[in-house]
Image: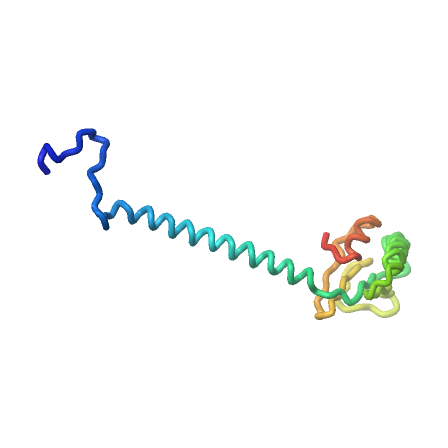
Amino acid sequence: MDPEDAPKNPVEKPAETPGSMAKKPDTIYIILGVIIVLFILIIVFKKFGKEKLESAKKVKEYVIHYTDWCPACKSMIPIWDKVTASITSGNTSVTFRKHNETQNPTPGIEAIPTIIRYYEDGSQEKYPGGHSEDRLRTFLTGNSL
């Protein structure tokens, strides 16, 4: 390179020719950025789609598993009765049932009281607990806690 062809400003880059390597890193970063954005979108849509699918499952019935001698059951049954009575007055197609574990134990019931949401597809979801009327109503109206 002749001194006359050298850039006047030492920071100034020489003119780039078409197809030079200077543009390739920009292209690579753009492609990587697009791939990352697409990957994030796929993850978000898969999660959203899964939640949408789970919320679309039809509830068949709710069952409270209890015993007559259990103090926690004795305090939960009146709350269950009050909440289910107010929900069934809305003519829901979901059934609410009480199952006495003393008379007929259910395999898999390890603690009492246990409230389970049974879906038509055979899956189930346990009530996470709490003797709050509002919390129980939220669960029995199809919402997760």
